[in-house]
Amino acid sequence: MRPRIVLAIVPLLLVVGAVATLQRHRSPHPFRVAIEMDVSYGPHVSNLYDHFQPVGAKGDPLVIVIHGGGTSGSTRADRWATAFCRALAADGIEAWSVDYRGAPDAQWPAQVDDCCAAICHARKLGHREVFLLGLCVGGWFGCAAAREQRVEGIITIAAPLVTPDWDHRLRGRILGDVSPTDASPFHHLPPSEPPLLLIHGTDDETVPFTHAVSMQGRAEAADRDVSLLTLDGFRHNEPPERLVPASYPAIYRWLQDHSAALGIR
Image (cartoon, rainbow, N blue to C red; front, side):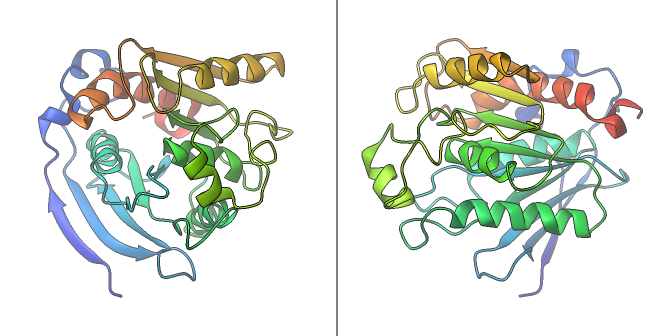
């Protein structure tokens, strides 16, 4: 399939509230964004990504955005993943929204293998700084992939990180016979955990806020670089029009602090 390319001007709604907090090392005007769709990163039919390229910006970092809804039919076009990609690209940061094989057709660790393949593809293209941004189960898959492939940092939003058995339907559909503990980022920190930014709403009714708090404590006990952004009163599926302005300024500042390339722009 030939990739499709479109040009877009990022709607200002996606970055409302962020302007005053993002002045350090950024253009006063949003970048124009070229979107290349249906790009292949691996051998499977679902191994595709949409490429959000800021026109005129070059080099690293790259942020790979991993959508949530691993069993609900969500795709890389989901509005949360797309909103974050657009916000990043508007600030001159290249972003990919990636698909992965979904459950129950493909069970663990297929989703993790696909995330690893996307990271490898980015390295083959010459990216030296690769960050992951995972939404819900995408954060779980991203943390697991970082045990296999080097990344420069991980951002999770409303992710099930302690034991992914908070929903028995997901446990059966994704993990099959695999123990939740064996698949849990909380129980399997890699030897050299990359920096971690946890973002979670206090009123999350699907993945309790305690997941982020427990993961923060676990990472701190292991002397890892971890930060927690608490979104007071936020539920699990807050619309991107609310979630992006509330979380993106902190994401951008965190990337500045952890990306050598972005920090010197």
